[in-house]
Image (cartoon, rainbow, N blue to C red; front, side, top):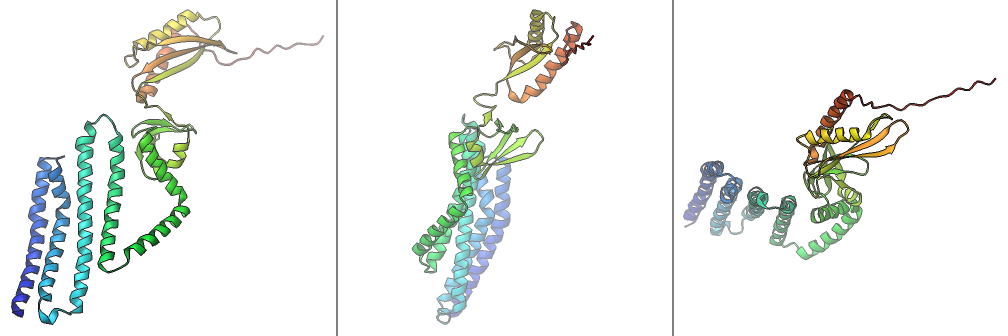
Length: 347
């Protein structure tokens, strides 16, 4: 009978290794092939992401079963190394199951982001998915740690109380980090700006929002550099959002012409140039205003609307070049600041 139990344990261990090898090769290849043929579907994504972890769990489970078979033998019931091995395998199983749950939720969130979130009119779900994904993984591993502690007869309530006191101390010591996390959550809920919006900070820096994280907001500047701003700072600042409520933006082009110029003609030229530009909106129509009598020039402003704020600088360049060329053709001078100095000679 003991020999039979030994053979059973050996068979279980060999079967676990065989199952692990099959899962690592055959099932993983099949899952990845299905994933390539049907991208974006939930089941292939889950199978491809969890195949390796599932194989690891099957291997550990088979070894646990083999150890259980060995413990049925009278000579091995009180074996210390078997108990130690079972404890190690139990911890490994809990870690494997935690990884499996985390990978499953990660695949689920990614499938939702790619398949469902892109079809919705709001971008709120796109912004919350990374946050939920991170928090769910933290929660899974916390539960796994509690299971391990409970298995080894460690007082969980005392640990939770100690963790609560420790977390309070950490929160007091890292109040800036906590403030940034709370501010990041409020930004995601209140949505003063969203990912891909172009915002302007109080110091005049402008860029496109790349990511709203737990601690900071990352902004891609016009120099193709990332500006990292703590969430608590940006949530308390006066931020100009050029992308909200729509991408439409107003251009204001100020310039001066020489005294003596026909201002009605100047205004007509400016409106004509803006109207002929195909990227300037027809409604609201471009309009020009005679603003003031400057020290050296008659000041005029052209107002035109652009459908996308990302095109504002290039359209401004086109219009300015057209104005310079047209003013030269019409003999309209653009003066520079000048002063008349009168010298009086005493007689």
